Image (cartoon, rainbow, N blue to C red; front, side):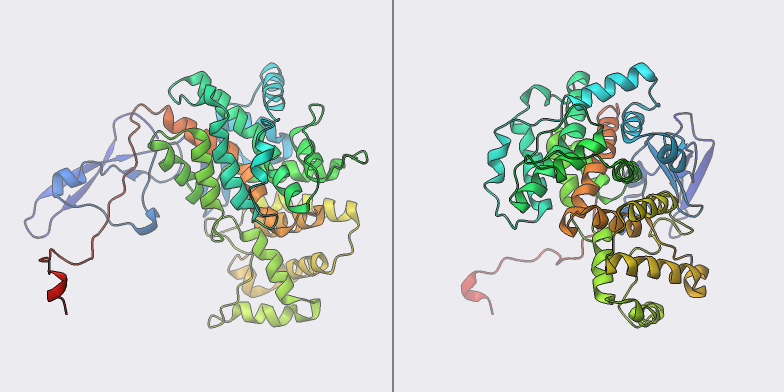
Length: 435
């Protein structure tokens, strides 16, 4: 958003007394302007009422821009299609953190810094023993990530730029390690220590699926698909979990606690569980011959059934991430040659929905969650881990948004208002006199 004086104003008039107030309209570099109502209460004695904050700009940000009507997602001005096609996840992480794509020297140093922070303190291994083996992986992640603040006291001063950077690097590096440990713990398998000779995505797959008893073969098709998944989920503007991280950070909480708060918010099925719901829907459909039945159910407005993974709350045209991941999905399924009825069912459902006039007219195209769920299933991840992988990718977005907020000179603690609808003032009645 521009720091130059607003060129336009918005006038608000009280119909009862005719009094008017003018508020500046602030223009960003893209997208609609916003009415600056920070003085509204002081001027009028009223707050705005905006449940879920869907019409409220909560911050200025230079990181991510979304145009849902046109199907545009950009990070720092670069389209997601270009980034997914031409960069790797480490480059995108650098871009989100620092504002520009790295040159060769910067990229090498950043790769090195992240790689050599991937190990976690050995005592963290003991934390896992406190969880039941059947604990949900997101429950474990919430606790383990918050516990990092107990181990890294040298980077908790949020006002020190160097400590902020070290914390950012540690979180980006260690979240995949913790996620892989969470998977291994649920399977009863030994933890696999990270390897410094592997790329970020290769290392994550190695820690998830490697075993001490035999060498792990890196599959470049799977590693490429994982890198694409991480890029496409890295940041998505001021969504629920990102807003949670910012709100927690506004209290000056340490970054590990803030990211843990973001993970807790992401855990909600309305936010981070969409790709898991895709697989659950496929289980519900069961077989290819039942697809027409469920297509008709999806068209029936009186039927609660919905096709999960089609359409998007933000993208009203198409999800720009979906095309990139469809290609990766096709490559993974072709490479693995999987004969899985559920994956075959997904591909048939995709084909029918893309040709059906009802879905085409309403632009209910497969979204990124549809393809990511299929890829992760093909790779061998249990559905309970899907949201954890979302958190692995989104950590770089969360920490970039947190870092941007902390460096904002006008930082204040977040404090939404409310419309109180409870009882008015009442007289206290002693217990013996109450009906």
